[in-house]
Amino acid sequence: MNHFITAIGTDSGKTLVSAVVCEALGANYWKPVQAGLPRDANTIKELVTKPINIFDEQFVLRTPASPHAAAIIDNVTINLDSFKLPTSSAPLVVEGAGGCLVPLNDQDFVIDLALRWNMPVILVANLYLGSINHTLLTAVLLQQKHVNVTGIIFNGEPNPESERIILKHTRYRVLLRIGKEPIINRPRVKWYAEQFLKNYS
Image (tube, rainbow, N blue to C red; front, side):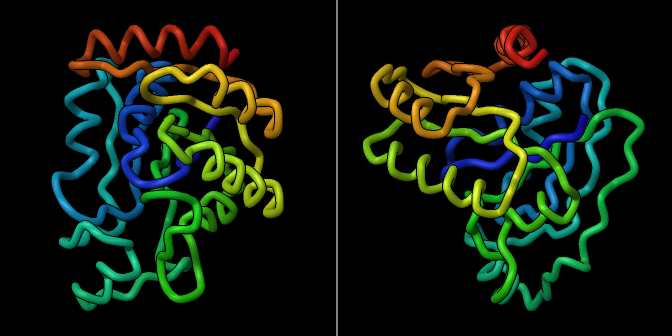
């Protein structure tokens, strides 16, 4: 099954989660829009042990900013019709940019890509002060848009009470909890992939 990885905000851990899911499912990887460097595809190459295909981005923008703003700087036009899902013989993991309502242009948002391809979402929530509000707002949006959510992955220092209240109101299943890791490498990603599979099946 294909999955779209999105999050409650920027720097929530989507690329790490994408690596874990690719490792777990033997899935190929694609990021439709890369805004700023280094490329997240290079991080995936460094972290995944299984032989997977990493497809080129549809757009590579130089400025680390919202895609709509980075595209203006690069004099590039982004619209939904520009995107073509890669043909993949294996499951495909698609990593979004930022959070669900990060704009691609004046009309469309990152979550519209998941809707366009009818792709189930894995939501990444990092646990900082204010993350309850951001996670529940994201969940409301996904519900309003009738997005199929496979589950949630918590990332960072554990916060049992934050997790409890989020799960109570979203009714999401927990696919994985990623701790605050001093080093992320292939063995660690492989270990998390094994934990992910215990909850995914």
